[in-house]
Length: 445
Image (cartoon, rainbow, N blue to C red; front, side, top):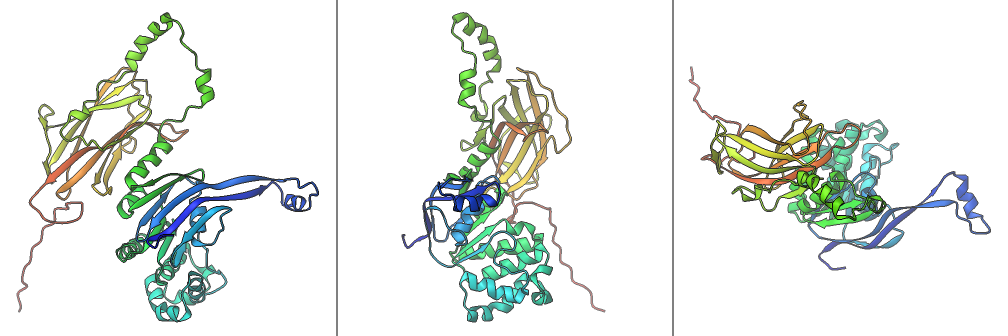
């Protein structure tokens, strides 16, 4: 293992034996014919990756994809059944609630228990104990049994213990989601400090904004397999496409589809094909178009053009705009197939992927549609750019509202438009709240 690698895994796999009944374990153990009474569940399959020291890695994937299994193997609480993994340095892991803590012990006793499991010495824990309690903010509850703690109190103490054990690698498996907002912010500030110190951090979250904002690398697991690893934005796009894009067509469906053999059949199908053909994509000709956009969906409808216009909607205008300016955006949509209940959405993000605003017609309780095949519609949007001067990206999307299933992505164009906002203020952050600052001197009697 190279000295600059924190974690290296090769052909990693984890399989579980699933028995229908407890007695089947015994029957299999004593079977003279070596009969199998179990089925095999492969939680991880041939996972290979390496992580450089000092990287912050976000692990994403649907529930049941093997994320927690992989983190448990990395933390040393679970052994792989295939392949190998090498971990360099002290590992502190916040996995599922209760891991590493004995509910019958007090918080104080669990700090020493969990700290010793991480690898901290008694002397280290004695020296840092007061800091652990102060960070956790649980006060006198430190001498109460952990079984009396709320889930939020448990997370406070577990996180405080982990970060004060001087870990080289910190692993967090969605545990922070149960903490209150202020404590979450405190934890993320600490994570930023640890990043600056060059520590390696692994965390799982379903909040893609956090992955983009905090991670230098992302890993995407699905069905126990590593589907993608690398740039967070690219990995997230792959995950979203797999999760919400068009359903895969099975080969049996392809073989069962009617075949066109005669010229007459082909000719009769041409009018329908022409009707389904979307207009040319004019978005690419706009000066504010972002060639690095990510587009996906089943294309039953298409966003084929957009324009920034004046308040009367008659004259086209071009970025850059000014912070605080009213912006009017007109979007052209073509329906290749009928859609009964479309959803139109817009998102505005910063360069590092932080969402500053998002809305869609469903959240606004606008019941739009139905629209017929071949129909063209114009979506008009107006918003005020109450943002700090800087660079922003606008995403536009269409989905189909289906209460019986996940909303089906029709045409989603992430980071489609690149907009620059100018202004004279040198404030920092994202939002321009119109701050006024005045100072007056009180008169003394």
